[in-house]
Each structure stands twice: as C-alpha cells, then as structure tokens.
Length: 310
Ligand SMILES: [Zn+2]
Image 1 (cartoon, rainbow, N blue to C red):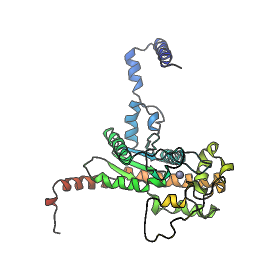
Image 2 (cartoon, rainbow, N blue to C red; image 1 turned 90 degrees about the vertical axis):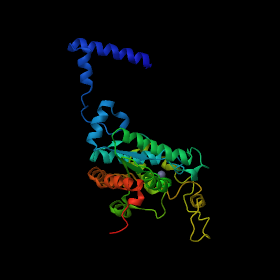
Image 3 (cartoon, helix red, strand yellow; image 1 turned 60 degrees about the horizontal axis):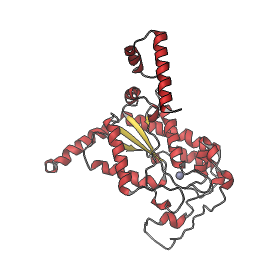
Image 4 (cartoon, rainbow, N blue to C red; image 1 turned 90 degrees about the horizontal axis):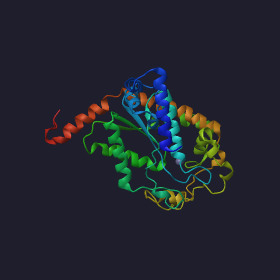
C-alpha cells in the first residue's frame, strides 16, 4: 500500500471512530498515551509513549544482541549468530522483562573476508557505532546496557569495548553477558553431543538453528565442505597471530553440522535463556557498578588527591 493511501485510510478510520464514539480530537490524543497492554520487548515494536513504560518496567535495561554477517559452513545462513543471539535474548526477556535492541550485526569479522557475503566494518566504525548506540540508549534513560554476543570473532572486541568504557566519564554502565561461571549448559550438552570437534556451524550451531529456524537449515549440504581442523600453524609455539583461524578453518566451518538436532538446540535455548534471565535480574538489582564508576571518574579527574595511605 502506498504511504498516501495508508494515510488517507487512517484519516477515514479516525474520523469514523471519532464520529461513532463521539470523541473530540483531544480525547483521541489522550487515549493514545495510555500504555499498551502487554508491552513488547522488541525495541522496534514499541511506540514512543510506550517506550517510557518499557524503560521503567525494564529498570532502565536493554539488551543489544550482537551478531555478524558471515559464512556458516555450506548449510547455515549468513545471519546465524545474530538470529541465534536475538532468539536467546527474546526468550530471556520473556522470563525477565528487558528491552531487546533491533538487529545489530556491526562486529569484528576480518577473518572471513575471503568468503562470500561477509560484511566487515572498519575498526573505528565498529567501535564508534557501538559507543554511539550506547550513548543514545543512555540519553533515552537506559543506564544499564547488556551486550549479548552471538559471534566468536566478537569476543575480544566486546571485552575491549567494555574496558574502554573507563576512558571517559559516563552516567551508564555496559555489562557483557559472560556465563563462563555457569556449567549447567555445558554439562547438559555433554550428554547429548555426538561430535568431538565443534566451534562454527557444527553440531551446536546447527542444533540452535534447527530449534528456532529449521526452514533456514540445509542439512543435506552440511557435508559439502570440510569442517576439519587443517592445523596449518602446528609448528608455531607459544604464539598468537591473527591468521590462526584461517590457518585452521579456511572453509569457515569447524565441526560437522550434519550431527545437529532440534533437541540439542531446544536444550541450549531453554537452559541458557534461564542463565541470561538470571543475569538480567542481577543487573537490574546492581547499584554497585554505577556507584564505583562514579567514584572512579571523580578520582580520575584529580589523581593527585587519591589517597596513597591506608
Ligand atoms: Zn556462528
């Protein structure tokens, strides 16, 4: 429908509604600011007036699920990481209300530039875009921002992003979801796992997609390419180098997607959404991070006044 036709139809509907209900334009406007029943969790689905309610209901929290656009073996979609971490965030938000930010795929992915469909933004763009997104959320009352990462290549980038939050004074905090101290998911998956090598578009990721978007999984193509570790830097000792992933997995595939099952994916989402919901609750209750940040920024303005004795 054209925008003009839609506008005309809306005007016709509104005048009809006003006539039937005997309402004036003013009372219709007042009607519009009432909060919607069942506040959406998806940022893009909230109306501007409902956004105020959502900020209050979420305790000023919002998740940014951070994905990427990259190859996922020969059988999974380019947006796998984004689709998965957004699904996880939505399931967690259904358990513990928070706002979930729209599709965010502006992360670190230089290592897949040789594969079709990769979108690799420059270093400054990825840092600036995430910072400005956080600044804008904070300007809108969201003082606790939760990053939920869906992409292995973002891990160091997002930790670095958290570190640099201390570079300049701010009135908000960034929390990175880090369930490394919770073994419930790993323990449950250990019993179900059929493969020993996994890590990218393998058993786990194929299972997650089978659980929520089976229509995007081309399981019959999962063995079209090799997901074996090619180990091409085996002679290098005690060293890290940026080409390590390409050295091991040039097909941008690690493991075997053919082993994936819907059951394993469901188990992952069910358990992990509970862990993430627990994190959201703890972030909502946390007052210490912002208090310590404030103390730190005040101290960093006048370091010579920082006490050097007990
Ligand atoms: Zn992935």
